[in-house]
Every structure is written in structure tokens, then in C-alpha cells.
Image (cartoon, rainbow, N blue to C red):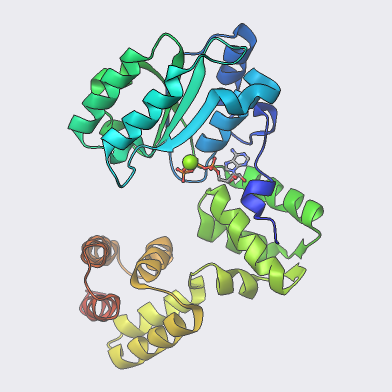
Length: 315
Ligand SMILES: Nc1ncnc2c1ncn2[C@@H]1O[C@H](COP(=O)(O)OP(=O)(O)OP(=O)(O)O)[C@@H](O)[C@H]1O
Ligand SMILES: [Mg+2]
């Protein structure tokens, strides 16, 4: 069986969490004082929210961490009552050699306001022997009564320097080499999300132990900047049919869907050699087509329509 790198290399102590120093220091102080508040971890995917919660519990409780910790997804398909039931069962028994049990609730921002109210009552009910760590992408989606009961921690996307160090380090541990161009490509497509970085590298390293730029774009469900430029330029110059053909080929080759294409274009659009006004329009179109695809519009048709719109931009 192959190890999944994101699990294999997940830091097991706060000391090894990368690039979130302000947060890590505050959490370490809680461990030191053996006193923890309810907490809200907010920030983009793959920046260390779950990792920090687990590392905190391991640092606090050592070998006994498993007895004192559950991780549950707030947006369980079966509803908030199932989540509360699970919490209740866990909270009913005493912590093992500790003051508190810790409940990690992932995706708390996916809960409706009513469900969050219910959750707030659960938090209060078990405050004597439980601490909640809630994780979300957007803290603004969490109701005030919960926010005000929590210490809030804002996780940032990892800066390029730290991502670069992480990549080099992973290469040493897993025995692959990676070219400078490939490192740049990984940084470009992962935008500070270390889960994405790790998964891209693991997939690329299955094929080769000398990772090049092509290998990265091959596995990253992404287009290269040059490819996007070429397609957009064709479209802008009215060569819609060619642009469409080229894009369709790339989508099939790399297994990309509409969302991947929109993300790729969004990343490159600021570098395009077109007037600012056209960039603004393009940005609006991207938002609109993103929404249509997310709402279930056919990927192929929407992307074609997007290319047609691009063809009509002032340039
Ligand atoms: N700050 C970090 N330091 C070290 N490794 C990290 C860090 N952030 C992410 N990782 C790596 O990426 C993987 C995913 O991170 P994690 O599960 O903590 O993300 P998350 O912030 O909880 O994301 P999501 O919002 O998607 O739940 C981890 O297993 C780890 O390998
Ligand atoms: Mg997480």
C-alpha cells in the first residue's frame, strides 16, 4: 500500500507546523498553561487548520490524545442532529487524565444559522468538560454568538518562500529532484495550499524522480501560462474556432473540467497584453461562468460561450 504523503508528512507537533508562527505561538502558550478556550480556525484550504488542531491535542495529551479528541464534520449529510448526538456521546464520558476533551468541528461555515444556534447550545451544555475547535473558510459565515465565545485564529496562505522550503524538504525525504521551473509551476498552481502542493508532488513523483515543469502541469489539472495566453490571444483576435479546438484538446488530454479552465485563466489574466478595461470585463465574465458551471451548466458549452465572449472584448 502506498502512503498518502499528506498524512505521512502531517506535522504531529505544533513545533513542526509551517508558516503560521503567530498562531502556533499562541497555541503553544495554551499548552504551556494547560488552559484552552473554544477556538475558531478560519482560513483557506490546506493551510494547517486541521493539522494545528491535531498537533495541539497531541502536544497537550501525549499518548492519551485519542481518548480526548474527536474530529467531526459539522456539515454531516445526515444533519446537525446527528452531529450533536455524536458530540453528546463523546462528551458524556470524562476526559482521560485531562481537564477537557476536545471536539474538532470541520466546515462549521457550511451550517445554516439555525443549525449554528443549535450548535451553540451544545457548546454551552458541555463547556464544563469540553472545548470546541471549529474550522471554517470564512469566519463571517459564523454567527456572532459563536464567534464571541471563541478565540479566533486566522490562517494565511503560505508565502512562496515557505512553500519552496517545504518542496525542497519533501524532495529530500521522498527522494525526488525537482527543477526550478517545476518548483515555480507548483507554487503557481497551488496558491499557498500545502495539501495541493503535496498531492501534486506525490502524483508527479510516481512517474519520475526528476520532476519537470510538464510533469507538474500534467498532474495539476491546470494549463500552462503560455497555453492560456495562446488560446486567449486566438480568441481575442477573432479566431474562435482554433481557440476552441485547442482548448478542447487540452481539456481532454489533461482531464480538465470547466472549473479548472476558469481558475487557470483567472490566474493568468493579469499578465495578458490587453487594456485594463478588457481585463475588468474578462473578470466579470469569469465570475459569471464560474457561477453557471457551479450551478450545473454544461462545462463544455459554458467554456465555449466564455471564449465567444472573450472574442468580443475591446482590445
Ligand atoms: N502549516 C502547515 N505546516 C505543515 N504542513 C501543512 C501545513 N498546512 C498544510 N499542511 C499539509 O497539508 C495537509 C493538509 O493540511 P490541513 O488538513 O491542516 O489543511 P486545512 O487547513 O485543515 O484545510 P481544509 O480547509 O481543506 O480542511 C496536511 O496533511 C499537511 O501535510
Ligand atoms: Mg481541515
